[in-house]
Amino acid sequence: MRKHLIISTALGALAISAWSSAAAAQASAASQQAQPQPSTQAAPPAGAQAQSKPTNPPEAQRDKLVDEAVAAVRETQNALTAIDQNKNDDAIAALERATGKLEIVLARTPTLALAPVDVSVVTHDVIGTPADVEKIRGEVGAAIAQGRLQLARKLISDLGSETVVNISKLPLGTYPAALKQAAALLHEGKPQEAKAVLQTALGTIVIDQIVIPLPLVRAQLALEDARSLLEKRKRTDAESARMRQLLGTARTQLQLGKALGYATDSEMTDLIASVDDLERKTAGSQSAKGLLDPFGPKFDEARRSSQRPR
Image 1 (spheres, rainbow, N blue to C red):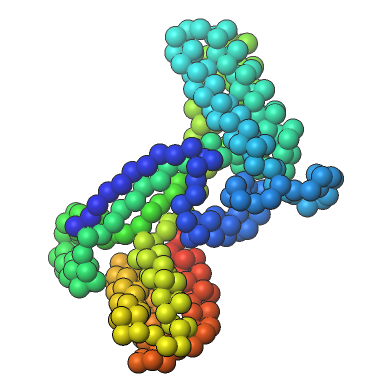
Image 2: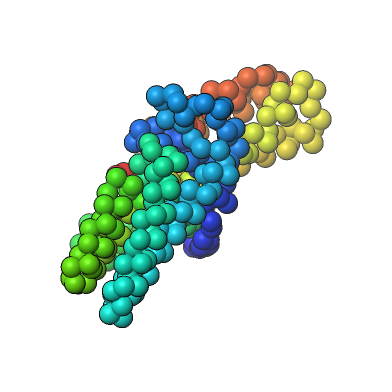
């Protein structure tokens, strides 16, 4: 019932959709941390670094910072390999290189709390109708009622239609100090203690997850495709048929999103009702501008509700 697509990308190539950009912006605002922004953002004006408010580095510098942070993680792993091979001098050298990389990052962006080091993108897509999903939901409920949790877990594993973006970030407040501590332990002839410190440091990498519900994305795209037809005063029969087809697609995708549990039930019900109202207001040859304007905030709210709880 489900298709799987797994993609690994470089951070600079992360351009999934407006949904991922908006969700990332919300996560950034919530954490109040200076994070890299999409590459379409203009570079800050000269002298902006002197302001008290943190600013984002230009695109070229941002890519360089990411490279330095990734290299620091790689050198940490090299140090662990050297320790396992009883090559303490090589491990110390690797840690010195890693520390140097992070010092560059901190010197260029002293307000940066988390440095992105990896991005993975995984897409799960349901092949089925809202009715198919509702049927499986019923089977899940029955399995739980019978105490068959493993069967319920197997059934529910297919109930997802989404792209999930996982962004791994290095905590710059603690990671450099851990590297220095490990280097000191190696100088003292304590490789196993140094290894434990490095493994713990790697375990502190933060993973931000952005969920992009595909049914909601498809519904929003269908409505945008229908915009010109909705606002056209004299539609042909073919254009009216195309408009109704797009509204039907949006409705079906929203029903699928509701069945899959994306956003809240009330938010999804409201979106579906709004599509029904839109169809009534543009029946026949009727047209109106601005009818899609209220959908933007509603989709924004649904996107926020669809994110994984932390």
